[in-house]
Length: 111
Length: 116
Image 1 (tube, each protein chain N blue to C red):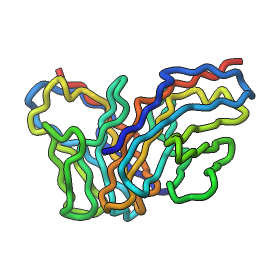
Image 2: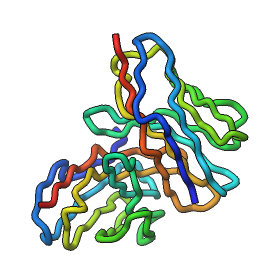
Image 3: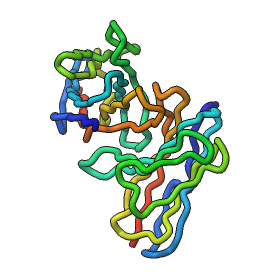
């Protein structure tokens, strides 16, 4: 079954404690992205990757890092989380830019 | 730069009726794609329908159709024969197709409530 998986699905953490949200897709897609969703703002892109070792900033990259060492994985790293990074995070992948598959979402709370 | 505007924060529709969710866009890309997604209360994002700016005909997928008016820069979603399960948040999005980069720009969404 074609899917994008994210882990963890829910996370409560404290300010400054480094965390990683994993994202994996099994469709051999080249394009992968991270988005955050906040009430009233829709989804905003954090980072995207066009292929292995090729990443670029989206609209709201501050406070986040990514890496793309393998085609299937695209982890999102928060080196020093802050309360304003409390949000719902989605990973997405696509093959031909026509459609994107989304992961189930990760709800992060930073206290 | 790209911008998506969804002016209806909330809509109500009676079961079995049709409903139109508005979306207007702005872009400098000569070719682009337009998307609609559904987000039920469970939170996942579900792809509904896609329209390329170069497509001659409006896209349809089952009960969903996209009313694409290029000159007006609008890409409204029409849901026919609404069902209770259609109650959800709906997002319009677009992507430029000229560059390899795959950025999707979203609107702020419209919450649809289907009533009996």
